Length: 310
Length: 126
Image (cartoon, rainbow over the protein chains, first blue to last red):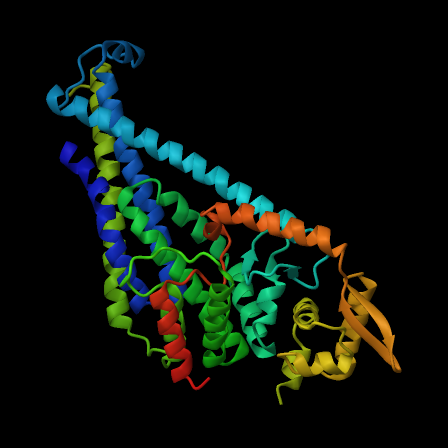
């Protein structure tokens, strides 16, 4: 039973590699939602497993056993295993809960601040312009959706490139990508291995919006150029450069530009199907393992409560 | 001709495109100049209609120029606004989490990224 509960804690470790493969083989939009869905379910299962470990440990303590109306001792593995597992689970749950709440609050604050900034002047259509010397642009979800662009960004692009930029941000809003991005941020705090998935989900969202923008303006090279010029303009305006380790893997922006400049990939249904199947298998396995183990523990608690025979 | 296709786009999107041109320009623009800098193909009368609508909403200012008007984005007190915008920016910058809900157009580049990007742009012939 205890071994079964370890599965939901271990399976998330497979997700970062699988997610990168999925992005390489599925269409960006499909990869985005598949990976996000799997990450959320795996995070939920791992939290549930921790909660069950904690519950078992608590029910071995007399006060909690009395609270749970246990009339017989709970049948578990030896205390040597159960107590450290419960203590570790409590620590992990507390840590996750703390960072989760903090991250949710911080994101809420950043969102409200951006919303207030966008509301400073009447929009033209869905566009909010912020008069700022720093090139920046982002999609602002909400009712109604907005696209926020700084004057410096508008000035660093030509007319057709600006259309690609607007189409890209509109694709984020139309696709509801903020939901996937928020989910990616939250699951990253639920399990350390899921932190690696966050970058893949972000890249998938950008790639999905890039492809939508390219389709909307009808020109992949133009879209690629707009992204590259915007990124380089942003870099030129930044006085302090980020301290990246030399030789770090190529970042998301060149990957996006490269993908757009390359001819659209012919669909590879078999490779895509295989990776989707693996993702689904991982997730189902995790859900089944945590559900079975939880049901088993529940049964044993009822036995200890004298309501069921062993 | 793409003309008809762009004319049929939602009014909000066309307003956004026109507004983007005005903000990108450093001086007031006439409807004809706006039409030329647009990334979409619109008839000049359509551009004029959009500019008039934006003016009615108070989003743009206009002044007489020749027989028509030249348009520019309506600005609030420039200094005060510039300061507020900068303050908000630095506030948002402090929050590394900003990218998470707000999907940004471009992320920061590493020096390697910058080199790769320049190579890609050059290879593409620009």
